[in-house]
Image 1: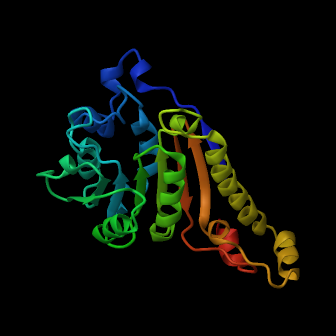
Image 2 (image 1 turned 120 degrees about the horizontal axis):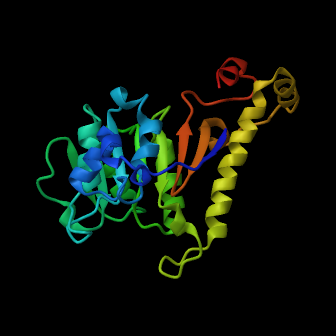
Length: 253
């Protein structure tokens, strides 16, 4: 399923203070730019995470933000820690100033987001299968894609992987990005959703079974949906991988 939404910013609401959600209040309290005063990502996150909020045991965010970043160390990590009452929150950053007393249930992995050892450490800190992964790191397309490809297998079944600030994926000299690179990555995920979606009908299942050695690739069998909203893309992982002829799982969607 591909979803594209444009959401109204709470900051545009005439009675903004009366409409602040708990997550938005935390964003403003800790100074993260995810709040309604800036990107307003919290509104999307509320709808994405509300149903799984009680069951989230761990979250990894790439780009924790040190003191050198707007003077607020680990602002979003503290927001997530308070909003997910039982979750371990792991931050990944190459800025050593993210280290320090960040409070309970926050852990830090220092290193580059495409360093295998750094990502392995973050996954280990998150208990091996994080429920949520958020990439708010380099905003360099090739690094974001490489990080997704490495971490996707570690994401828990039913988990959600978010790439933030997708406005940076366009051709911008400061990041050295070529939007075509990100478009190819995103369109491939959408194609994979379309492939596993076609397995739902009996006719399509029969056609696939005739192929004999037909095999779904990793994303075709595991990507449940791709959600594109202003400034971010969220990819949800299936509860169980699909396989040709597995009509029970396919029908379950």
